[in-house]
Image (tube, rainbow, N blue to C red; front, side, top):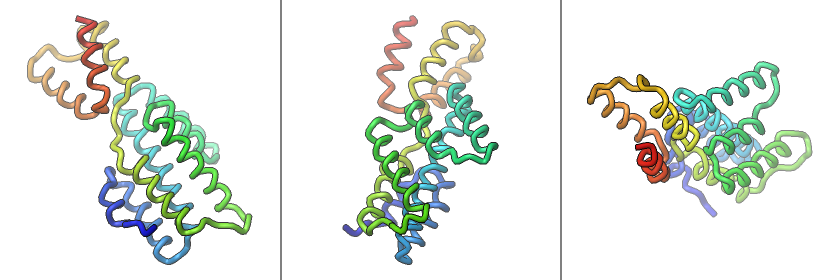
Length: 195
């Protein structure tokens, strides 16, 4: 299996993910497969953390998670498993993606320690594909908990949005562009229910 790293790179949504991805690619191209595997995991973990940070700007639950991550980091502990678990809880990862990335992390933990083993070429290529498919190509979009909180605010806080047509329109455009499209029907049902 020969992967096209340039195609995977083009699919990356967030610019800040490019640097670490490129580092992993350099390791891969120089046949340092163990380092490439470790580097692609670091890229995944950083990307998930960044997605949580972006979502936290509008989502209180994600903001609380971000603060918990920062506490783990401040104690100089590895936040990798914590970030992975919280990404699943926040809905950034589905069950399938979580399981695949959990395996990637487990193998990264083995390869990053002196067990005198490393990944084979196909395993490293699969790690790049999984990183791209499950994390790097997915934008940081707001999930169901944000929609539920939005409904609560719209229902209970009369001054949540200014009562000017252009403000309401701008808010609606801004929010719908940041929510997972598959949740639009859920959002519509929720709005209709509250009318």
